[in-house]
Image (cartoon, rainbow, N blue to C red; front, side):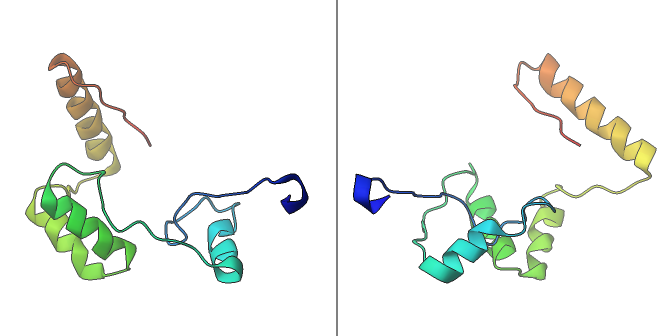
Length: 103
């Protein structure tokens, strides 16, 4: 690639869980060639979410307390959780929000 003046710049997170088939490709690239890390979290609206996302990324299991404390963790049977997910999606839809429900 150098011969043709091209660069390959993979963008990802070596610490984010990938699909089982991926085999940790970003981690292999980072280990062999190094990497740059973006330090500013912009994905979340609330400050506690930004800070907590970094704790989770670092593997700090205590980070789950922030999610529990902010009502982000629910529990129930599989049927109850499926119905709760659908109910919340419908409520968002009726309120005019664009929401994605993934399973």
